[in-house]
Amino acid sequence: MPYAPLTPSAILSSLLLFSSAAFLAFAAACDGGDKAALIEIKAAFGNPAGLSSWTSGSPCCSAWSGVECDSTTGRVTSLTVFALNVSARVPPAIANLSALQSLNLAYNRLYGPLPAFLGPPHLPDLSFLRLDGNRLSGRIPATLTVFDLSLVGNRLSGPLPPSFAGATFGDVDLGDNRLTGDASFLFGHKKKLNALNLERNRFEFDLSRVQLPKVMDILKIAHNMIYGRIPAEAAHRKWLQFDVSYNRLCGPIPQSKYIQQFGASHFDHNKCLCGPPLAPCS
Ligand SMILES: *[C@@H]1O[C@H](CO)[C@@H](O)[C@H](O)[C@H]1NC(C)=O
Ligand SMILES: *[C@@H]1O[C@H](CO)[C@@H](O)[C@H](O)[C@H]1NC(C)=O
Image (cartoon, rainbow, N blue to C red):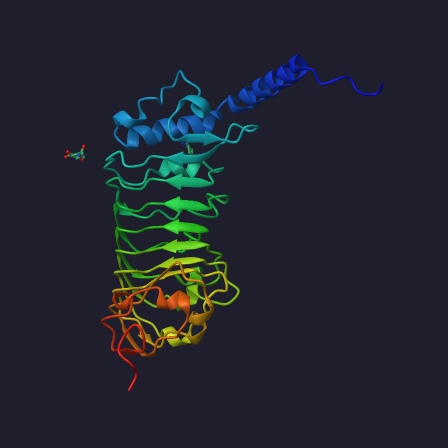
């Protein structure tokens, strides 16, 4: 008989083996340099009560809230300090967490400029960055080419960096800032951008010239100074969200059931957009 029968106790012991291995892996010692950087970040944040689990005597990968590590290297891969009312600049010690893939500091009171280390080359693996709902100001640095980028609800100003033209983005959320100028270089048939939010800024560019990315299903550009026409190919995207209201657009609205699901409020207050759900084109 080639195989031993799979008894309940054999199943149980293999489960136990598996789970203790998983636990050991999970508890891989936290990288010493990363731990020192986190302690410095906690101090820079004013030692908020929400980070009371961050103590030098406990393992940072398993015991510290908002910290996740690579199970084999013990390097910090994910840091979340969300809605803790932290009032500080973005701490330079974050640049020491060079294996970071995900950084979420949303809904605090962070102020000052966006540091250039929030992206390659300092943080080459960073692919998720959320800083929405803070008070960050100044321009967006050229290095912030992070795949999933949210800077919604800050005080950022000036034009987008030209480096964004060649970057690979999946999700770009820049709403509720004071950004100006051109954003058309974020578009392109072959781009991987599936969600773009530019709402309530001062962007000004010709929408007729953009090629909608094939994967795009969220386009929120309301409350800007965007002109030209809605590209005809908008009729061929399965929109989940679409809002172009309060701009300077003109011409017929491309017609499809995915466009038609949105009411007039998503098209209103433009220069001369026409056709359903707005008034017929004359
Ligand atoms: C961060 O990195 C810099 C440069 O490598 C080093 O001088 C500094 O001591 C590090 N800070 C911490 C808190 O580890
Ligand atoms: C947030 O922090 C500020 C000081 O930075 C303080 O005045 C305010 O009361 C805090 N808010 C909450 C909800 O803790």
